Length: 179
Image 1 (cartoon, rainbow, N blue to C red):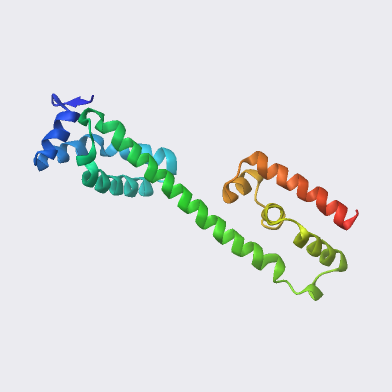
Image 2 (image 1 turned 120 degrees about the vertical axis):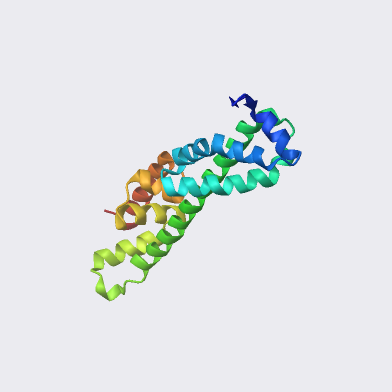
């Protein structure tokens, strides 16, 4: 329970449900900075955090009537902010992945083979024999020079999985090329 001006969150929620528009203004005044800070903690961008908090308020105001126990307003509302922040990071990650998949295809497969040395042609052919997952890791790591941590984030896998895929891809390339 959060009390400011001796009015609990639950009381303000109940008053808002009863039609008192000033009650929601007090809740916004009380929690907006907290919501912005929580969103910032996840997205690491102040402007985006403010946008997420604003979008969250729209949803909170629309759905506050579904809140069964008004005393849990703060935790309920913070979950909404948290989910919206996570959704934003997933969206950005997905966009990065789509962009890098586009770059991956453009970077290697669109190079005319006559522009490559025989060894590079053999390597390109060997890379194309790898699984899609291994190709992604190889291309992101070697062609685009992302760190393993960045590769993991782009593909949305753990860093250990990225490391494992890279290792197995290298081993398979060794057997294909027979170095």
